[in-house]
Length: 387
Ligand SMILES: Cc1cc2nc3c(=O)[nH]c(=O)nc-3n(C[C@H](O)[C@H](O)[C@H](O)COP(=O)(O)OP(=O)(O)OC[C@H]3O[C@@H](n4cnc5c(N)ncnc54)[C@H](O)[C@@H]3O)c2cc1C
Image (cartoon, rainbow, N blue to C red):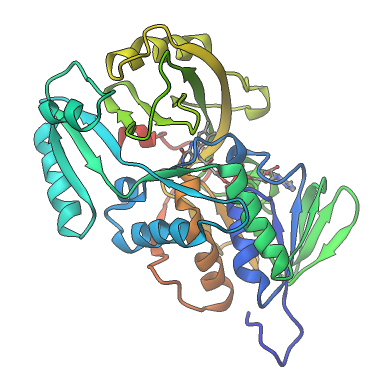
């Protein structure tokens, strides 16, 4: 499929205005007739519940072009509408036993040109005054990390897509992908039919419900949680982002000096029945662990907490593809494994490559559906907190 000035613009319907759908819409809007359909509101799924941490070097360091593309995108997009990228160092704490592996990781990433070093425990407190981990060991220091407000990010992309000609309809639920002779011809919604030459399904965990009968992908929903703590003394700009690997917890400062803490990953078979509140056990874990790593949190106040649903794949990486067994013209974008905000810059160029053949500035092979020899949801779940 290829759009050019001699032909009518190709009509593309994108299902879901989360971070994936908004990126796809923005990318395609300049040379396609794009309609973005959202059953609720922009960023009303996992996107709006995200902690917004951006650390592609950590999770995609083995795919340096992907990590670099993702890092560059948020910096270039900074300042678009209300969107901003807050750069902040990140510490991944490791025990003495984990230190040799951590040093090896640092050697590899630094060798590939990333700003990563290993800090001994003795240097942590002098460089980060509020940090005081009890264990021997140290931390990997990432200097190219930061965070975004995911709601503002998605809306800035949506707004950019609209200014490039895309139309957005919220409150429109897609009920079925319409196919004819092995290719998509549009979608049915609760209201009417939308005709299209291609359909991009970026519907988060609901993606599997929309796939044509007899076709499935190796994806499964899982639940993860966040709480926000208010310390006695607000955090200042020296406070890092961090991860306490042994506890499967991560944290980042808020602009007002509070601390957002995330963790607790568990698969769920019925996402609609899962609580959207943080569990008491998770809140207790956070209250116990955080004061042992950051000073000033012994009597921290609980500000709020929540849980959201994201999508897992067997190898923790997303599927952004026109799967061979699917009807022609059907592209899916899902399975971000809790990393969809930082990984989202790959969606636009990858969707474009799948639809038009125009090459993305990185290899899109890691996002192909046919890299798996399983389908459906019966694979073992691996949390990205274990990586
Ligand atoms: C608590 C939590 C913390 C997280 N923290 C981070 C983090 O720090 N950093 C990071 O990179 N990632 C993080 N993530 C992961 C990230 O938020 C997700 O990977 C990402 O938002 C997924 O985006 P998406 O567009 O694929 O799906 P979603 O954001 O879920 O969007 C899907 C959209 O499709 C719509 N939709 C569904 N079905 C239909 C239909 N039939 N018709 C029309 N519309 C439909 C939904 O309403 C929704 O708006 C976190 C996730 C959670 C839950």
